[in-house]
Length: 369
Ligand code: NAD
Image: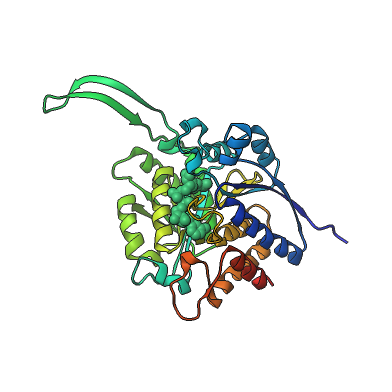
C-alpha cells in the first residue's frame, strides 16, 4: 500500500477573529484530507499582537524558521487596537512584512469572485459574473525602493521656499518582472486565457519595462491573449465591465489599490481569500484578505469562508491536492446556494439561513463530500 502524503502546515492564528476563522478552516481541511487520503500535520506558531505580548516582538525568529521548514503557511490575521500605539517597527503588521521578505513571497494572488447568489451584496447594480484573478508583485517597486527626506532652500515659482522634500522610488528589474509575468501567463493559461497588464506606461519608465518584458514572454504563450490597460482606466473598467477581466498582473502599488477595488465589487470582505507565493518548491502563505476584525472578535459573527477558501488555495498551489481544493470550493458554493449566511453576507431575503461562525463551519463540513 502506498503511504499517504503528510503535508506540514505552519499555522499562525494571530489576533482578533484569527483564532476563530483559522480553527474553522483547519476542521474543513481535516475532513477533506481524510476524504482524499492525505495527512496534514500542523505546527502552531505565534506572530502579530499575541507574539508581542508573549515575546516582545511581532515575528519571533522561531516562527519564521518554522514557516520556512513547512510546506505551506496558513494565517488568520494580525493586529488590533491594543497594539496601535506601539512604535512602527514593533507593530503587529510588521510580522507580515517579515514573513513576506523571509519566505521570498514575490507574488500575491487575489481571486475576486462574485457568487451569483450574493450579487445583491455587490455595490454594482448589474455586476454580472465576476471572476477575476489579480496577480500583484509583492516584494519590489515603490514600497521597497529608496526613500528619504531632506530640507530644500530652493524656491517654488510663487517665491515660497520648498522646505521639507520627501521621496519614494519605484524600481523594477527585468528579472523581477519576468518571474511574476510568467506566473501570470501560466495562471491565465489554466483559466480563460486572457491576461491584462495594468500599468502607467504613458508616464512611467518602469511600466514601459513591464510592457517590453511581458511582450517577450507572450511569445511563449500563443494561446493566451495579452492586453494592456493604464491603471487609471483600469479602476474605471473594473466598475464598468468587471466580467470582461480574467487575470490581471501588475506592480506592487497598483496591485494594492486595484485588488481592494476588485474585492469591494464582489460584496463582502469575509469571502475573499489570498495566496502569496515565492519560488516554486518554497512554502506559500495563505490568508483571508481581511484583517483581524477586533470589533467582532469573540461574538461569533466572523465569516470563516475567506479563510476556508484560502485553505483551498493552499491545497491547490502548495500541496498539489487540487481535487481536495475543488471539493472545498464546491462545498462553499454549496452552502451559499443553500442559503447559509453569516451577518456580513445576509440580505434578509427569503430562504436565508442565518448562522454564526460555528454554524457556517458545520454547514461547509456537511458539504465536504
Ligand atoms: P478588518 O478587515 O479587520 O475589518 C474591516 C471591517 O470588516 C470590520 O467591520 C470587520 O468587522 C469586518 N470584517 C472583517 N473580516 C470579517 C469577516 N471574516 N467576517 C465578517 N466581517 C468581517 O480591517 P480593519 O478594521 O481596518 O483592521 C483591523 C485590524 O486588522 C488592524 O489592526 C489592521 O492593522 C489589521 N489588519 C491585518 C491584516 C492582516 O493580518 N493581513 C490585514 C488588514 C488589516
